[in-house]
Amino acid sequence: PSGLDVMAALGSPAAMQGLEETGATDYFNYPEQMEQLQAAVKSQDEVGWLETANSSWLYTFLPQLDDKTTPYPDYMRTSAWKWKDLNSALGSWAELKHDTVLYSKMPEMAGGGGPPSSGPAPGFVEPNPLVFYRLAYLAHAISDGLTERGMVGDSSYDQINLSKLLNDMQNLGDHFQKLGDIAVKELGGIPLVEDDYTLIQSPIGALEERVLRSQFFSRHDTGDQQSMPPVPVIAAAAGAEEQILQ
Image 1: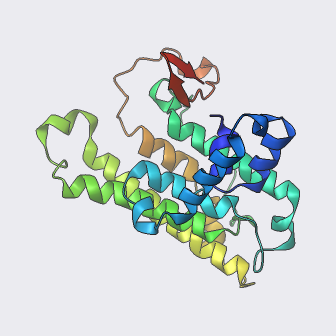
Image 2: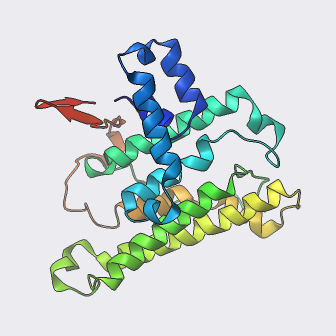
């Protein structure tokens, strides 16, 4: 299966269109098999989706791939936005299948001086609150689940600083929750306040970097951090007869 197959099964009209235009749906029994997969996705209840971290991650794609109607703004109902949503979901799915952070370390630099800071600039959050709320649930569930299983404080996990990792994961979940609240305001036409703009401008990228690494991979020596080349994401999508589709 390709990434488009996965997204079509999850209900993306854009993915299905792409498959039809490239002739992928001409395979024997393809339409029937796809209909069965789509039916299985639609019949899955929320409890089933939230059973594992992997399926919870897939669950965040559903509101992103759905056709948008009221109260979403007009630009989110265009065909261009459907392709944008599909591209975003495919990127996240690739990360789910394979963590680039396992094999690379981002360039780093020391802090320096600069001009006086000004107030937060106007910002924008994609007004799709369900995506943010489901990401918040996933981050909190991972942290709470490992804590409830007694892994925090276990000496065998001291080397990866699990306590700090889980604390960062909780903070990431809180951040997603607040972004979801901002998205609700945008859909309702409620003006954003300065605190909202400050949150939008806050470095969630750096927060994600700490969550994913959090000294987890500090033992890997990656050499010159200032000249590391970009690392593409390679996702092992499926396998058959000792062959792997990437």
